[in-house]
Image (tube, rainbow, N blue to C red; front, side, top):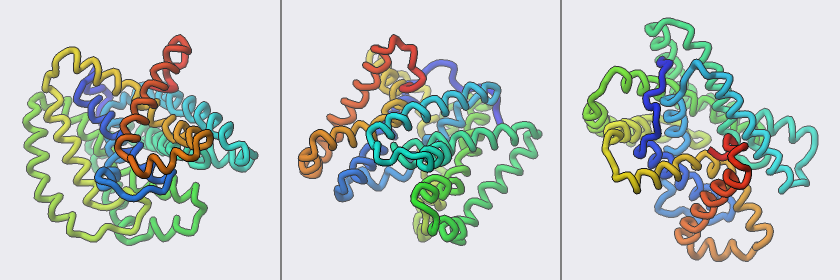
Amino acid sequence: MSDKRPYKTRNSIIDLLRVALTVLVINTHIKIIIGAGTNLLEPYSWYTVPLFIILSFFLFDSKSIFTRIKRLFLPLIFWSTAGFIIHLNLLNAKNIFLQVLTGHVVNTPLYYLILLFWFTVISRLISRFSLRFKVLIYSLLILACLFFEYSRLNYGFFLSQSEVIKKSYGRFIELIKYVPVGLAFALLKKKINNSNVFLLLSVILLPVFIIVSRIPQPLDFHFSGLKILTGSIIIFSLMLGLSDFKLNNKLSNIINTFGKYSFGVYLSHYLLLETMLIFFPSLKFLIVVNQFVFLFCFIMFCYVFCYLFDLLTWKKLSYLVK
C-alpha cells in the first residue's frame, strides 16, 4: 500500500517492541525444547509472530523486493547449514529439500523466513493494482483467512500433513492476514502525523478485543482467530502512538543496539540452546527450576553472541545477525 518506509532512522519504541517480542519467542522455545511447564509470559507469546509480520510490512519498501528476498534467503541458508551441522543425523537430500521448502526441519524458527518470502512475493504482485483495488483484495483476503480458520478447513487440511509442513504452511493462512495490517499502518502513518490518533484507535478497539475474546479460539497452529488479530492491532497501534516519545540518548542507544541484533537472536537462539544442552545436559534441570533467571541470562548470551559474531566477521556478514 505504501512504497515508503515510515521511519528512515531507528526508532527506540519500535526497537523496544522488537526486543520484547524476541524475549517472548525465546521463552516459548525454551519451554518447547526442555519440556517445561507454562509460565507467566506464555499467554502473550501467540502475539509475537503476528506482530513481527505487521512490523516487517510496516517497514517494507516495495521498491527493494530483491534486496529483501536476498536478506531472507542468505540467513536461511547459513542458519540451516548450522542446524544440519548440529543435527548431522538429519542431513540427507530429502531433509535439505524440506528445509529450503519449509524452514522447519532444523532450527525450526526459520519457517518465518519462508513465509515472509511468500508474503513478500504476494504483496508485490498485489502492489501493482490501484489503492482501491488493493484495499478490496486485502479485505477479502482477511475475511477468507478467518473463514478458513473458523470453519476448521485450514486446520483439517494440514493436520494430517507431516510436522514440518503443518508447522510452516499450516500457518500460512493464519499469518498472511497480518500483511495488509502492516501495510495499512504504514499508509496511515504516512498520512497522519498525530500519534494520538493511534492511541485513540487502540482504546477504541479494546472493547472489540474483550468481545471477540469470548469467541472460542478455533483449532489452529497457534496464530488464528479474531482475538489474536484484534490484540495484535491494538498492541501495534499503541506502539505507534508512543513512537514519538523521546527517551534519553543513552537509553535510546542501548535499546537501538538490542533492537538491531534481535533478528540475529531470533535466528540463532534455538540452535544455541540445543548446542548448550548437548554439551551440558544437566542444564535442563536447572532451567526448569529457575526459568526466569535462565531466560534473562540466555537472552543476554544470545545478544552478546550476535554482537561478537558481527564484530569478529568485521561486519562483512551483518545481514546474518541484524
